[in-house]
Image 1: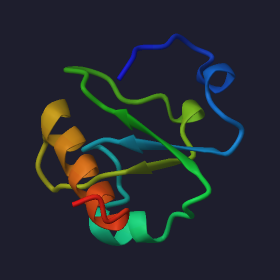
Image 2: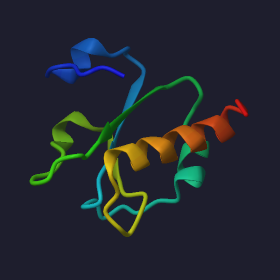
Image 3: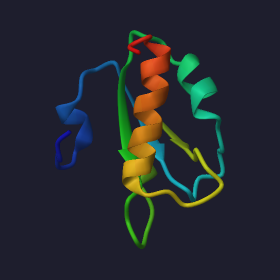
Length: 92
């Protein structure tokens, strides 16, 4: 994991799919179902909303989703993402 400065796109591969995770998103998804719809040819970039105030700048995302009806800490969001990607890619 690393922190990079804007513009985000200049640091990412061309085939990146930038997915924002935010409690404030109106698009609630089941993360397990969501990751199965994504092509394995994409480089996934997850942008986690970990701000006490404000929201993710959607200008820098391809999709903005919510994975819970409750606010989650950034570490819990990362855990959810890792677990579902492990299942999808059969790492376990």
